[in-house]
Length: 180
Image (cartoon, rainbow, N blue to C red; front, side):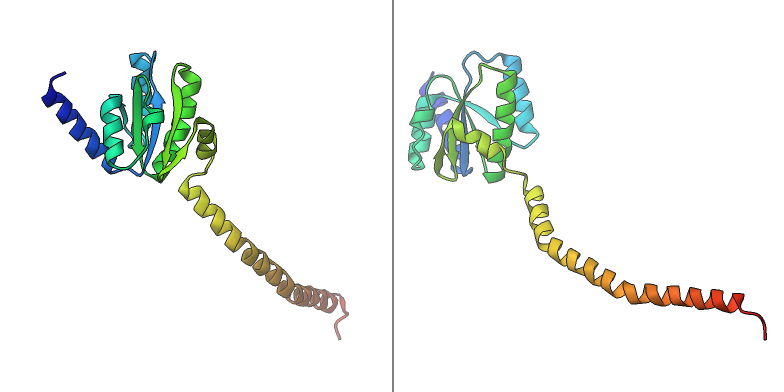
C-alpha cells in the first residue's frame, strides 16, 4: 500500500478515534460479506459504524490518544466507536448478531476508558434504555405519593358516601310515610 494511502487512512482513523468515548472490538475473520452488511445495517439503525481497521494503524491511533488497545487488535478486526448509550445498543446488537453469525468474535472493548471483556458485554446489554430508566425512577418517586393520594381520597370519601346513603334513606322513609 503506498505511503500516501496509509497516511490518509491513518489520519481518518485518528479522527474517528478522537471523538468517541467508548469502543467495542469485533473479530470478523470468516464473516461473509452479506453477514457483515447485515451487521452494519443493524448498527446503522443506532447511528453506529462498524469500521474494519488495519491493526498497526489502529494501534498507533489509539496509542496517540493514550488508549491501550493492542490486546483487542489481533487478526481481522472491526471497531465500533460510540458514546455511553451507543455502547449499550452496540452490545445488544453484537450479542444478537453473534447468535446469527457464529464466526463473529466478540473481543470486548473500552467503556469510558475502562477495559471490558467479552464476559462484560451481556451485563452491558442488559442495562435498560435511558427512557426506561427514567420511567422507573419516576415510578419509584411517584408511587408512594400516588398511594397516599388514593388512601386520602378513600378516607375522605367515606363521610360523603354515608351522607348520600342517609339522604337516600330519608327520601325513602319520607316516601313510605303516610301523608298527614
